[in-house]
Image 1: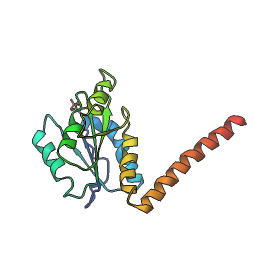
Image 2: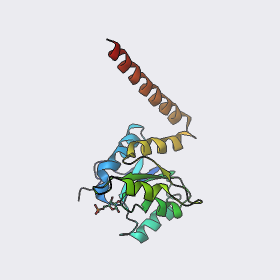
Image 3: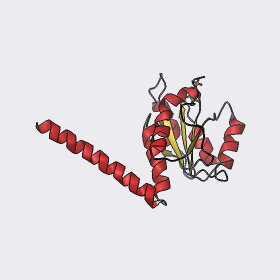
Image 4: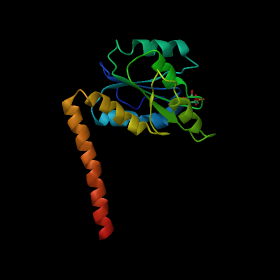
Amino acid sequence: MSSPSTPAEPSASPLIGVIMGSDSDWRVMQDAVAVLDDFGIPCEVDVVSAHRTPERMVEYGRTARERGLRAIIAGAGGAAHLPGMVAAVTTIPVIGVPVPLSHLDGMDSLLSIVQMPAGIPVATVSIGGAKNAGLLAAAVLGSSDAELGARLDAYRRDLNDQVEVKRQALRQ
Ligand code: RP5
C-alpha cells in the first residue's frame, strides 16, 4: 500500500494526530505532516476509516486526549464522515481536510465535512488544504506556547517578504 510511511518514525509523544480514511489520501495529507515537521511538532500518522474500521476510529478518538494529543487533523474523501465522527467522540479540536477524489472534485468531501450540526464542531479547511490544516494545528499549539507562536509570526513575516520580493521584481 502507498502507506504514509514517508514521515519519520512516530514520536514518543505526538501532539498532533494526522489521520486519513485511506492510504490513498496520503498524497494530500502529507502536506499537513510536512508543515508539522517544519515546525518541529511531533505528530503521529495513521489510516483510520470511519466505515471500514469504525471500532478503531472510536477508540482513536476516545483515547486521543489521554494519549497527549492536542488536536487531530482528519482527512477524507467522498462521503467524508471521518472528521465529524472523530469529533463526536473527543473534545480536542478536530481539523477536517476535504480530500478531492476524481468524481466531484472534492465538493462532496467539503460539504460532508463542513456542514456539521451545531454542537460538534469541525474546523474545515479548503479542498485539499492539508497545508493550512497543519498551520492551524500549529496555531492551536502556539496559542499556549510563546516560542512556537513567535515562529508562526516569523512564518507570516516571511510570506509578507516573499510578496515584497515579487513586487520589486515586477517593477524591474
Ligand atoms: C474515503 O474514501 C477515503 O478517505 C478516501 O478518500 C476514499 C477512497 O478510499 P479508497 O477507495 O482509495 O481506499 O473513505
